[in-house]
Length: 315
Image (tube, rainbow, N blue to C red; front, side, top):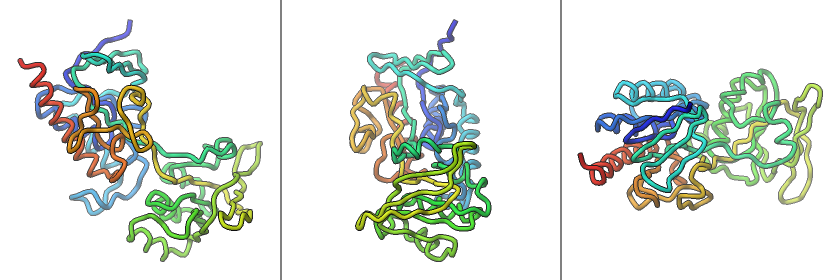
């Protein structure tokens, strides 16, 4: 028989927003339950050097998230390795169902499910996904020692991936639709000074090709967006780094969203369109998308949840 867990506050997600919410909610004596989700620790677990986390001039992303998890746990947050597959927000208390079969019944919910990598949607991209096509340089870069590889994109994510991949690859070609990068200047400076990186402007990925047995990438075809000319680029790995989309599957039909699926919150607040449901981090932030702002919103969500519970369920 499936277990039912009751809690004042359920936190769904385990990135900086979720863990910070756990710290603050625990200090408020709410005894929160935090369900980690499909990617414990969130996107920072797939990054390497983090240089903009206050107090650490440089820290490894996975290490930072392990520290946050330990902090939340030490404060009293119950952390559960489950994945929420269904969330009923039609009435209070709210009910979430885990992949384990466990039901979580909560008086308030903080959504901190974050965001996931976007894909181009090409058939050949899908075909070679996991066999030469990746969206995570830190996960898969090691496999391309001494190889030529390609990064698709022109923002912070793409530049960071390209720079990291030079630790392994003999050459990194950065393919971008424009002739100007939309990244932080310090990252652009590093890229321009790196002899292993060759930008290819005004081009977009048209096709990934390779072998079928075994499945593996041999190269890509790109198309010049101005002339239509097709260019063949031999490579062993393709890293798609075109940004992220909010992981809103649980609430896209029940909460108000905007800007491509980000959950709407009230001005200067983490309150959503349903009282008692709060959203923090990359699920709601289409503008900043930084670890430190996600943590700040996690703090806000916990404080607002505490106030909501005190006003609606005074004891």
